[in-house]
Image (cartoon, rainbow, N blue to C red; front, side):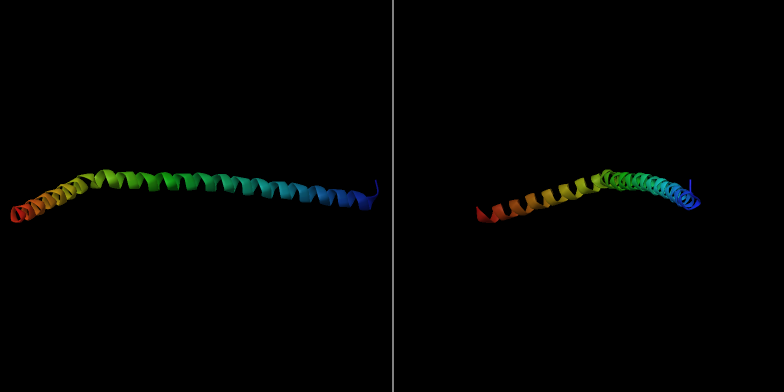
Length: 82
């Protein structure tokens, strides 16, 4: 094999190996990024559900308060219209 062709072939081989290493690193970083994104969304959804669970008694109290107030106002109106 001619020395010039052999050198070009070796250079091409070295570039292909370097490219392969970079592609493996990129793919590895993509996998880690996907995992971190998944964990992020699990945390966000869990916090939302946890906040709803924590605040539910207060929401129920406010709902009961507004329902009672509405009933009282309706009764007050009805007492003057009859």
